[in-house]
Amino acid sequence: MAHKLTPFITAEQIAERVESLGREITADYTSAKPLVCICVLKGAFLFFADVIRKIEREVEVDFVRLASYGTGTSRGDDIVFSKDLEISIEGKDVLVIEDIVDTGHSMDFLLHVLRRRNPKSLKICSLIDKHERRRLDVTVDFAGFKLNEGFIVGYGLDYAERYRELDGIYELSTDTDS
Image 1: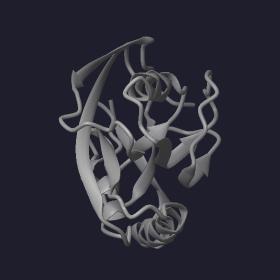
Image 2: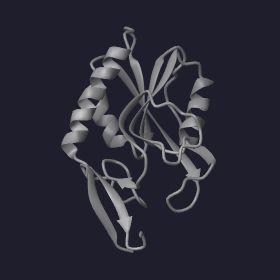
Image 3: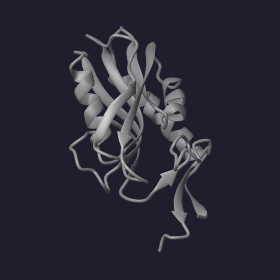
Image 4: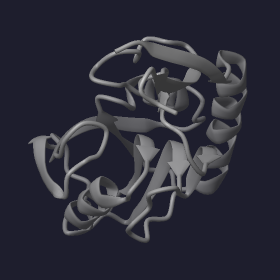
């Protein structure tokens, strides 16, 4: 199957938006305590690294990885942790950093789990806030880019583990797309 990549968001546009997000996040959190930034693996790793370097306050970092069981390009509703947090978030400001919030299933699951751990606050920063297939009411507090439709790859976003390394975001189409 041949893939066609059409430029969608350039590396320069991403860098500018990440800079702005860093300022927005810094302004939103005023506590003297460190902000706990949680990276949702694998897709958010590039975005996460760039964003936390633009937050002008002390941060603690940790990582989670979720597995959802579905087929092809759609995610399933059965979600499990394949890597859990290593630090306590009780009483702390927590910012979950994700690559894309799409249907909302994975993020809803993660927020439910994290809320039971009694953080002081819990917010979401997502590179892409996509509404085309949103099924659950999940609010992205800090959105890099809002998208209504399309299948995108690059800058951490993948298709079958490919294209994560691209510095921009591309719309992916296949020879079977019409």
